[in-house]
Image (tube, rainbow, N blue to C red; front, side, top):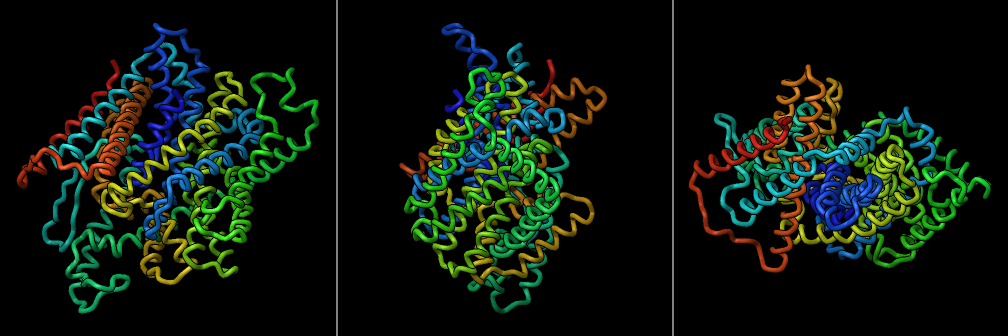
Length: 617
């Protein structure tokens, strides 16, 4: 069940990350769905134990972190006009996943056991509580499954049957080319609820600055220009639509802001990173120097303290690095053996550093706040500068640098997820080495599904389009190009960095603001609506913590189902388009303004349903 749910949520998270630049932790939804399924089939088999449910959750949750690492980088290859094979993408994903899990294993005793009580690991602790509560009964699984069903039906109506519009736009009067809009889809509404009001408000504020301030400002300047403005070389700004201005200019400003947000997050985390790295090195040295009498393979050792043997870990790491170095057409596509022999040790170094950092940081702030994108930016900058020194600045050099970032990003992402899962198992009395094997199975089994989702989604929607902007990958592409070649409009990038610095100076988190600045306003608006729904629920029950927690958790489970349902059907529609062409609908057409009003009315009903599903019976 872990493999099945992992593949399903891995595909859904792939779609969500490419659409909004955000992925969500799937540990709790997978845990609840597993318990619900086991309860459904208990008439035909022996009742499942809580540790079996925990194992399914451990295997299944590995897929979401794998998807996060892949969608941050791989779509950039398609944006360069390349066509990586599904096996290359899956190979990079699975090797990065294996490397992250193996590097994290020696840290478990320190971070999970010895630091118990000091490192809360919020998702891991919450997941343990959910499994215990689900074992006692409850409607949590029903909320997830209902959300999946609603998400599937809603997406079927707007993206396959075309019964009503999925996106509505409106121009603002008196301001030239100022535009607002909303992509009325379940997944974005659900993301807003999960993120909460503050983060959603910051994101929509950044998007409004782009679409209501910067685009009209560029339009005002462009009205007086008689020649194209760099980086555009063919069209005048005066002749561009708001979407074209956003695509040719604003995205560079947004990329600069996102890069600044990622770097400032790393800077803030530097003390923790340095401390975590030192502790990690000390722990691994102690494990390597341990005598056979205290080896994890000794049968008399306590079951709940048994890890995979350190010799297995070392051999596994060596095999992964050797495969990366010696396999043609994997790193960089057509990279030479010399380039791969340089790239493989760089992967080992950066992966070890950021796996150590990620495993500890998520213990403090959780997976959702793990600065994986910032770690990837630092990796790409470091590798790109090495390549500049070696003279590897051609297309092969760019692709090799990016694929190095893919492996490191997947490793850092899955290490954080593994830490949370091991914390859940620690609280429930699971056997660590069995969970570690489960993580390896989860990473290996979902890699091909995530890679297939990437290939199919690009074929159906095309990365970089309004349907799938792939924001994180576009940022990584810009960074690699900026170091290895000239041609990036650095003035626009620096404007974005300065905007990020300004919001930091007024104590606003720059990263969510930058994501909003970068993405279309139609993507941010439904996220804000979801955040508002959660805000009103929390405000109403602020004096009743028990009811507040129940309503919040019910909403998160239903929202997770909405994300899963829309994501799964989106991949399914992309698969249909891949073989039979884009769906043509059933010929329903709404004239303006009825089309917009119908879309808003149905989206309002969806928001009301989300609110109703949080009510405590």
